[in-house]
Image 1: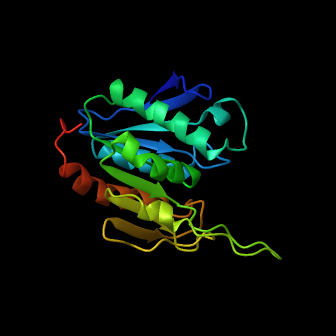
Image 2: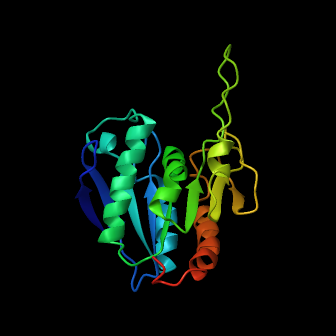
Image 3: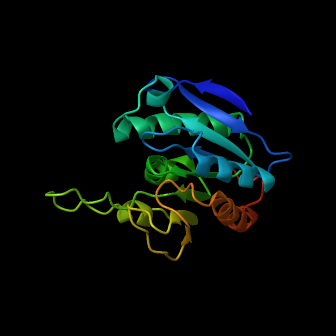
Length: 211
C-alpha cells in the first residue's frame, strides 16, 4: 500500500493505493461521514477486490486529511472526489476500467458524480437510504433517487438491521443483505464474499483497454 497526496479545489486529499498484481480494473472507494478509510467494511472490500485482480484506492476527503470529523458541504465533497478520481485515472490506475463507490456518505458522493468519472460500475457499502426518525421531528426524505439516477451496474451491500433502511433491488442494482447494522462489522466475511461474487461479472463486461 502507498499513500498519495492529491491536490483538490478544497485542499489536499489522500489516496491509499492497494495495487493488485496484473490488475484488470481499478476500484476507488470513499469513506463515511465521521469515519475514515480504515473502516472494517472498506478493508474487507479492498482485500476481496485485490484478490480478484482489481487495484483499489481508498480516498480520504480533504476535511479528514485536515483533521476534521464534520463533513464538508456536498458540492465540496463532489469536487474533491472528482479531482482525485481524475488524477488516479491518469496515473496510478491509468488504462484500467474504473469502478467507484464507498461506504455511507462516500457512496452518496460516488452516486452523484458517477457520470463524470466515466465509471463502469458502482459499489455501495451501507448506503444511508433514509436517516432514522428523531423524536418529535418529521421523517427524513428518502435518498433512493440518488441510487435510481445511477445507470451503470451497482452492488449495494447492506446490513440486514441497518437503521437507515435497505434499498430495493433494481434492473441494474443488486442488493445483498449481510448480518449487522449500518457499521457492517458483524460479518466481514459476508461483505467480502458479496464483493468477490459481484466483481468478476462487471469487470468481465469491459476489456482492460476500455477506458
